[in-house]
Length: 260
Image (cartoon, rainbow, N blue to C red; front, side):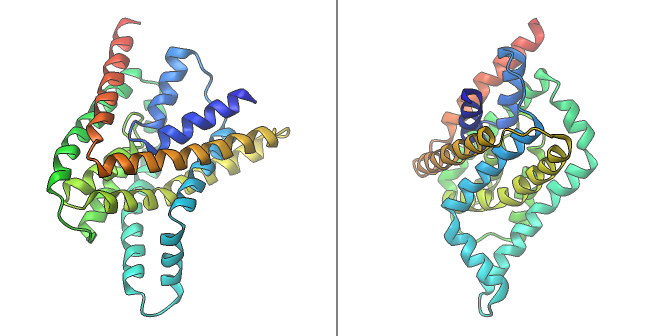
């Protein structure tokens, strides 16, 4: 039970804070000797973090759903189209590079380098945030953010980190960049976790549902806290704090890879 709770905490924190949940999974396996969560547990934990987004952005999602069925909601329909455009790159990348991505999870050196890139991006975004000037997202913005999200398939590249950073670099104000990033996470996380859940359920006979539900619930609660914490730091222009963390962990990973 304790392991499920701990994994839920780790998932909830690292999924939304710009420090790469995939990198922490790889490093935990290598350095701490922690076994990776099974496919079913991983899927449930991701469902939990998706629930955090659904809870915090429920009003936005309600308006978007209204926009699908009601007239005179052009702004909402336009936003749905932008989210759809931004989702295309990760779908294509996931289909074309599935095997390469799986191999990347075996390379501590690659994870370390990717964390350095994430850290560098966060420093640049921290600088760019002072020059943001608009709240409207264009089609080019959504495509650029979508391409950034696709790069986060590489362990060590933070999905929230690069998508928010690209938004800031495009001149989008921090809160709108974060809003778009978190809403964009839903198709990717729900799609990937749904696929994993389907595979896992077909392979498992004895499923510890109680432990799984607790782990998912913990991930959801911690995810809500993590999102609120990140939004608060964004308002204060503190992205570089996460950049320092990513660079420190990345250098540690590279050093460990070269010395082992």
